[in-house]
Image 1 (cartoon, rainbow, N blue to C red):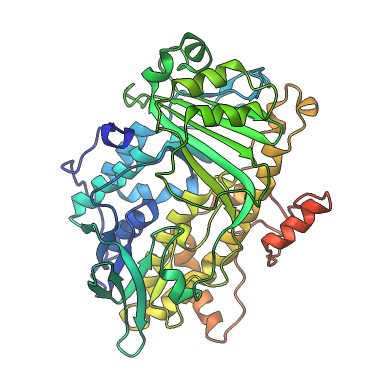
Image 2 (cartoon, one colour):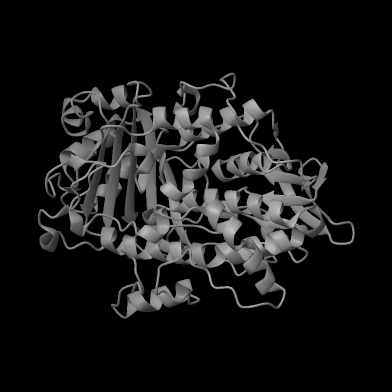
Length: 501
């Protein structure tokens, strides 16, 4: 049985609703395509803001696949409005964890440190205030779905969308399923990921990924399965036998991330693993993005042999993984989308459908959540009579921040993939990812509330609106993958201008 079917949370769909303040009904109907993290948060926030919500999901049932991701503080602030969900989030978050950087050989890079006290800090930060936290995707998804059920929001499964459309005269948008069924609403939110057919109505079908020359293999397995090997247990066991441990292993043109996890109650013990590596050539890289694309243990061990020096503990860990549990995923490059909404403003993309992130950015899920929070606020301000203005204002409020956060991913990728092991020595600060204050201190709901009127007026010919949810002193500049590749070809690095502290 897969991890997705084994997960439990201490909350449930039957849990206490508590006192959640819902805005007066707006009369706006919102159809959300995709029941991933971005789609479910959009459903919750739109419902809380008084909009009528339905969700269509292509899977046949509620699913919670995947392994781990990071959620920034800006992507967790919305939870404060949902007391039952906030309690669940506390239960599944990493408590009393530690982080241990190692070279790919298994040698330590500095001493292990508490996850809530990174190198250079002296004060512990509570779990609910940490800038960036690691979450298990299945548990986080289950937490959101429990709240969806408490609200009674309609989620219809087995609905595979093959077409998006809009009708400006009637003021609606809609979708067509593979069975020819049609569904319409005042606004359709495309939260159905990289392969979303919303690209046809938003970008004319553009937006396919380009090989980056790097791929990732990843797995989520029961911790006890891995711990059956004594060497694996020695290197990857829980701290003091009960607390989570995150281990980045850094090597030349490669790195691995391993999280040995248990929740606050000591349950849901899992081992989450990912290995990013450089392909022989970009031309040879697969571009098939499917969560069902598994590879064998021997294939992974073969990849590791191409980088001399991988420590035996990491190889032993790979051998413990059940056949079929390791998933291959190509890391494809995509330019920032020039548009995230249709011409008439009745179809809006959020999350991966709108913008993709390198794993090293640590921002994909966070920015999807920020998207969801922002559009719910914009719709509330604009009202049913001006939905296109809400959509365009949303795009203005989000565009600079998303493109800048994407850019951060390339900077962090260089720190991970091109790290000089000799220069790093025992200093973990030299390899830790950059998590700048402008990312995690932002409050997307407050920002949209305070800036909606100014941003909307700017679009209507008023004073030019300048976003402040980006680094201070940074002037947003268009960038492309071609430009990044030229930098790399010239031996140059990505430069961060402004305050990225």
